[in-house]
Amino acid sequence: MPDDGAVEPESRIGADERLHQMGQSCRRPLVANWPTHPVLAKLFADWTALYLPPDWLAVGRWITVGVASGAYLASEDLAEAERFVASLDVDQRRSELLYRALLDAFDGAGNQGSPAPIRMRAAVQTLVRSRVAVSPGGERLLWERGIGGLHSLAAGAIAWGVRAFCEGSLMAGILLAFVPRQHRMLQEFLVNRLTRLVRLGGRDDRALVLAILEDSYPNTPIQRATLAGAAKPILRGIEWMVCRSNISWWIQGAYGAGAELPHSKPEHATALIMELLRVIGPSTYEEQLRFSDDIAGFGRRNDGAIDANPGIYDLVRARWPWLLEGDTFGHECVLWWHVFDQAFWAGMLHECRDRELLPPKRIIDRFRRTET
Image 1: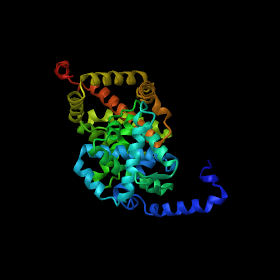
Image 2 (image 1 turned 30 degrees about the vertical axis):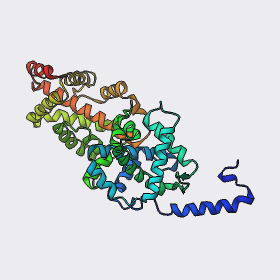
Image 3 (image 1 turned 180 degrees about the vertical axis):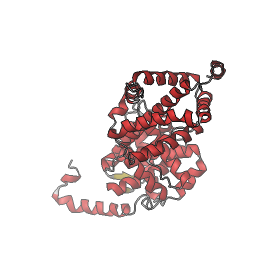
Image 4 (image 1 turned 90 degrees about the horizontal axis):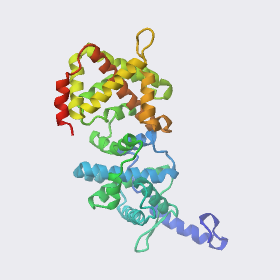
């Protein structure tokens, strides 16, 4: 049977007329106000910069992230999620049809054993391949195409994610429960970004690398404020250029900022250590202390200064090797967060040891008794 590009001549006029009639229903975007919506405009710009290519071939990825983001927002604050969806100018008739088609495709996909995002993308590709969605009553609508259609469908997918969560859909539950083996930080940031921007009204002027760094410490406010404050002037010094050629400067700057803290604000360095012991536990603290000693021993130069780069790169290769091979700006930002965090702590703990600011064993043992 001929495909869309090989319609038989005698049926061509009829096929064009049918597509034209269905196209009338697609002339209005699924979400008409996405280009001017303050949250969506910023959200889609960030998603594009970090990870999602602005290409129709990536429609499965956009809709998957959209549904997961909506479900996560609803799981955090359902009333807030419902207010956000109400702010979208959604074509309700088309949204209902496409949402039900997506649920059916997801439940009926033949890859139930696949990871949740792959299963979702497969369902989306099944739907958009024919361009036409058919309702149970026989109503036929075209899926949107192009960059505008990509963003419009992603906005609709956010609303679908909120609805799926409210309905207790298996689709929402599987996406929320999915934990990737690699790139977890980036995936969580992408999905959580909607919630963050909704609460900020779409206004977040931070560089994305700083947003990732700062948002990575939800339970340690002293650490969050200290590292974010230390990172800004270093990033300004390299003119905000997050690229591999600048990472050595970034690492060394983080190590130097950490080493300076016990000199300029010893009580602040002590508060950081106590927060780490209280929230994360003595095992992580002791591991970080050993790493700090390794960097000092391995990276010491003839003039006595310490080059943190060799030790940091060894750590990345051992713990997060995939970040060195990441092919998106988002992967680079996560790499920069990891190395800054490790270099800052290594420099600070090394100087704390020299200045005898480390907590005594009895304090560490007290936290060890409460560690689970």
